[in-house]
Image 1 (tube, rainbow, N blue to C red):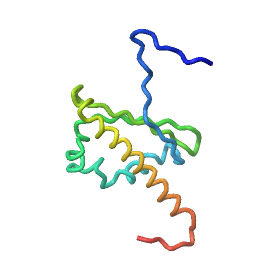
Image 2 (tube, one colour):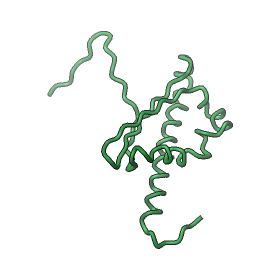
Image 3 (cartoon, rainbow, N blue to C red):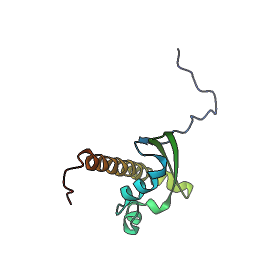
Length: 121
C-alpha cells in the first residue's frame, strides 16, 4: 500500500475526539451530569475564565453494544475569529471533558468493585 497524495483543493475528513465508556446509553445522561458537576465546564465563572462560553459544543452519542456507548465531541467557535484565537482553550476544554468522564467512570468502578466495603466521603 502506498501513501496517496491529496489532489488540489481536497480537504482531510474531520476527526472528532471520542471515547467509548462502559455505560449503557440509557444511563449516559446521569454519567455526564455527575462527571461535569462543579467543573469549569458548567460553572459560570469557569466558563468565562476559560472562554468556554464563546465556544459551541456538539455532543454525539451512539450505542456500541448493550453496555457501551461512544461519546463524540465537536467544539467550534461561535465566531470564525474565535476558532483561531481560542484553539488552545478549545483543545484543553475537550481534554477536561474526557478526563472528567473517565474520572467518573473510574469512581463508579471503584465503588462497585467491593460491595461490602463501607462508603468513604
